[in-house]
Length: 249
Image (cartoon, rainbow, N blue to C red; front, side, top):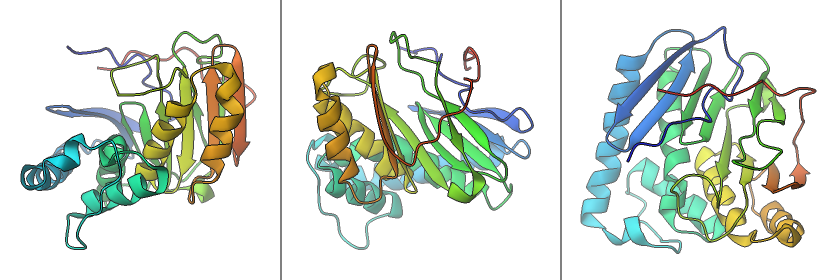
């Protein structure tokens, strides 16, 4: 069943052109210097073909909840997901949304100097001007109240969010939002999932931060559960949120 993407437009970028690309389960919201929907669609088809072909030959890759070693000649996206899983202790599919976002985003950077790709709340950014990313945390009173500043020199960057209370993604925790920042969007995605699995009550926030800060490559973490929040790393909050998020297509 289709779930409205009520968290979309969480990144400031009204000076850019926005468009969506949908192919089966993949549903991307992209902003760039111009409409690159045709090129983005081609990039999505190619990355899905690569991943699906690998899964057809290695079906355990799709279902494993633990890291898996892959061959050096595996497709690039498979190797990125495997590496992220190894660093975080989760299954490789925990990194798929971030990996797809970055793969498509890097392809579009050949055609646009600035690209933002959102895939199910997981975001790849390569910027030329400072942007803000708002944190959507479901029913938490902190939801849509916090925006983090992303400077161009800090990108390319992945900003990925996992939740135990929002959406259909598998989570063993109860956090309203765990957001991880990393130069690897696949790693940010896997890290957010791994940390979210730990946070079952507000008392687990310090434990989640301690686990996350030991993941090599993670630059920042935000954990929100109810009215409680924990922050670690290179996270700079904006003075004001972006405002209510728009409903995506």
